[in-house]
Image 1 (cartoon, rainbow, N blue to C red):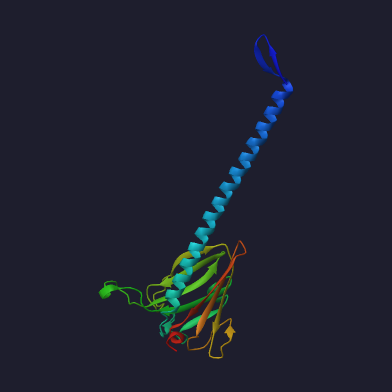
Image 2: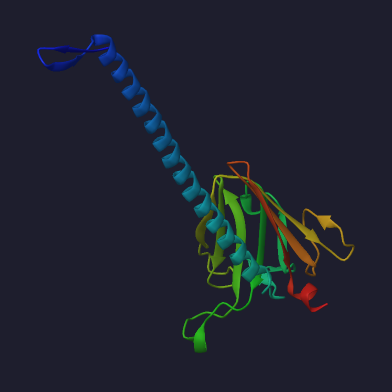
Length: 206
């Protein structure tokens, strides 16, 4: 109730308390809306960054697997490895699947660098991180450690399967020839699962 004394308008204590309560409710609601909007924006940015990183991973795999070279490699002992593509569960001490091969097309204009255009590469999972490793020289005769690049964090599973001549998907590859296609499936910490099928050179030609 508004009261008037000596020509001045005044408010009762109840009216003041009610006004303060309404103001507090409006402020709280505004804060919650703002907080929700900030969190949604942050989650959106994180998801966009995650998708961008995933696209980068698949683009690198596309470049590697579609340029696989039929090139044998030699280990530190000088023994020749007869497989052009190696892949299996826990290969190279990976937490999940591991895969390796030799790719062509590693840019080296007019042979300026002391290496060829071939590159020995592998994909493994270490400490929940998807890591791409590569060696400057295809044959591991000098005992040097491969260079590593962390591509994705928070990996919960990394599965690779191969489609061979029988048109069935297999989880490991021990054949001396190349498969028709490779299917890569990555499970992330937020339970998102992304898969991609990559055609290999021989399958593209047929």
